[in-house]
Image (cartoon, rainbow, N blue to C red; front, top):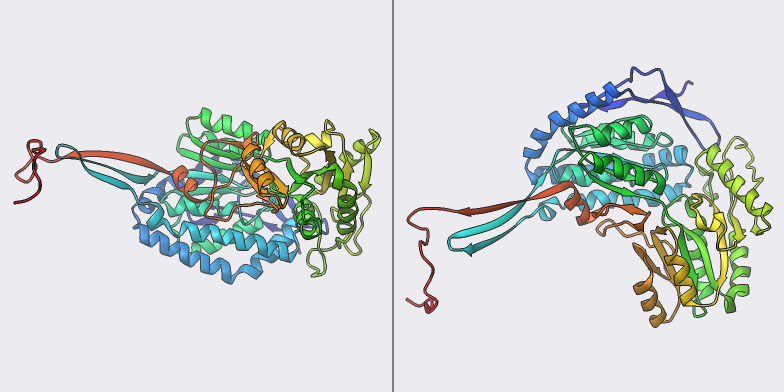
Amino acid sequence: MSPRKLQNLCAGKWVTSATTEYSNVYNPATGEVIAEHPLSTQSEIDQIIAGAVEAFGPWKRTPVPTRSAIMFRYRHLLTSHSDELAAIITMENGKTNEEAKGELLRAIQYVEHAAAVPETMKGSVTENIGTGVDIEFIREPLGVFAVIAPFNFPAMIPLYFAWAVATGNTVILKPSELCPLTAIRMAELAEEAGLLKGVLSIALGDKTVVERLGTHPDMVGLSFVGSSEIAGIVYKLVTGAGKRCQAQGGAKNHLVVTDTAAIDACMPNIVSSMYGNASQRCFAGSNILVYEQVYDEFLEKLLRLSREFRIGNPTDPSTTLGPVISASARDKFISAINAAEKSGTKLLLDGRGVTVKGCEGGYWVGPTLIESDLSAPEFRNELFGPVRCIAKVSGLNEAIEIINSSNYGHTAVVYTESGGVAREFRQRVDVGQVGVNVGTPAPIAFYPVGGRKSSFYGDLRGRANDAVDFYTDKKIIVSTWHGDLVQSKPVDPAFTGKV
């Protein structure tokens, strides 16, 4: 059976691209080609944008409760198709079925919050701000936005579009070339939920699609999630074209284990943070900083639990760690391990050479732990896979200095049973998200998300009310009226209100 040729969604129609250039979509557990992904032409992207522009007017005028009702229907369809969607995520991304279902649970919560648009779209009014003068603001949608999604959450990040369309905008979604199938199926379900033609479009392609969406005169904004290097480039490109942009970048998250940590109770949480989803998530614990007085005890328990992962085909219910996303990602991680070993770094856990019976063509890297020097590349730079570092620290001050000296500012976590230590940590670390005994402090849908420094470019974070602010503009209206009922002169200050 030949791989499926994927299509763009343009003005409500699924259209085969005229391009002759395609990239392959692989099952990372087997190396099998499961789809052919078109590198769409500029003229095709322009047609998609034109369709979204045309749809904006009617969609903007669609009553807010109607848009909310569509979001509720969409939530129902996503929920009823969750087994199907989880299977697609597992096939194209390599997550275990349990991990895929966990992603969908969070993703559907985005739609739930977006469905609250009758509340979140409310404006504000103050009467008699001056003599016979009222002032108010109303929220208005702006036009066509783009959402650029990464491979690691094929359902969650594409569903950022829910806030954009709920608030009355139209959206062009560009899923990752590595994992487009989940987004395509979710777009089909959005159509079934009742979105008008052209409200949601799918544009398939490479970075040239992002460049066109980010600079086209009819686009008003773009939301991006990816590496810090690309996030910085995208943010400058889009804002340089005079458009709104939020660009979420990478991470190098630190987990601090103090001398008051409940090590046995926290260890499953720590290991899950380090290696869950094959470490391919921006909230993953990257560097473990352990107080020297508990280092040996902690390391022994960490290694024992990390060795218990069952690496295998993610469709197997007994599998607890699946493949990394691609052959190039696997080779990058193995090169990093080789370089660390060559430099004399102590390799505590080696994930090279993993094979899975029946899946010999898959992209396998097992849990890897390096006792790293603080200046080593593997400690400083993001490695978006199961290659983690551990180091001793003398105490809280040294740990916070290490965290705050990083170029990244996404997440930091402290494990402690001391309230004073936790309070000082949360106040002093320069990051966007803090965990206290929670190794993956990813906020739920109705809280914003985003880092600092190179982990986030922009001023309005993704999700929740920040997303509503990003996708709308506050129009200020100052009004007065002339007629018999309008007060023509100031009220006497001595007037008591009694007749």
